Length: 319
Ligand code: NAP
Image (cartoon, rainbow, N blue to C red; front, side, top):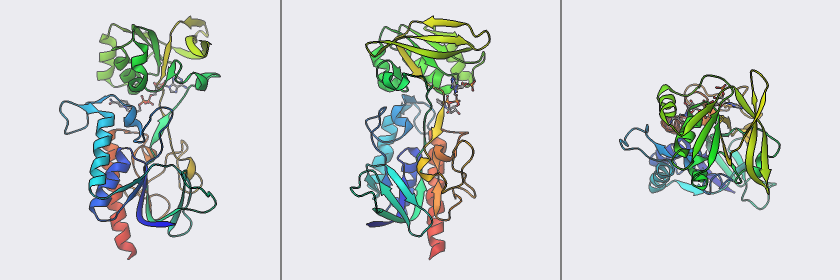
């Protein structure tokens, strides 16, 4: 069993910023960075699935999400942070030091890692529509990532579900490839910011299906061929022939392994106080896993910095 002063769980902007700061403070952090998933072949959080980021300060021309994450990882590595490509499967927070189990360990009966302080930066993930054949059609017409899959829909009629910034960002990106993009929204007003709305309304490839929800996904030979929409006001059903459906309806925090161990709100986000302290002394949370309001790369990075400073002060107070 290996003991570390600090373990960071998660490798998005929050986790990597916490790693940069704790490594520069000589705390020799280990980052458990997660595993490749069905939507990304690399860990690194939601920004690995993002296109251009125009609002991260310091990059006047913008930069790509994966490039930002690769840079942050290299920066943490340069100051001595180490990385383990695995998921945390279980934690024990009722004894000190804290104990962790990971997906890459052979024997799941005993923990493989212990730490004095734990920083949770596991982020949040995409919500899905929960339709019957949705999972089987992921990668065969259904997607949650325009960056990853947009290229495959060149010249096709496709749709995006959702009325928030993510949906509009995906739709605008997809107009580079698709013949037409229909934004399907369950109300008659968008939630997205004004600037994104203006861009979407001005784009002639984008049309809106207002007051509509997707009730069925149709496929032939396990490939999406169309959907059925239901009007939320009249209950009328209508078909829409599309070959791509991008789901962009929000996120859920990745807190399953911490359930029952840390105080959380009704949606499962970790509750923090006095900066990034959680309900367990010595456990800290930063980024989207504890923030359902701001959810920006810069706020996640900022709270990762706060977690590192909180850890440093807390470790000093323990000796
Ligand atoms: P969001 O703001 O929560 O929007 C989710 C959208 O999906 C809402 O329009 C919601 O409808 C709809 N929705 C939710 N569940 C649904 C369901 N089961 N069926 C159909 N529609 C459903 O999520 P988000 O767009 O992912 O954005 C999250 C945060 O990140 C926001 O604060 C956003 O501003 C920020 N963000 C910023 C940028 C940027 O600045 N470039 C890009 C992406 C995200 P209702 O409106 O009816 O609730």
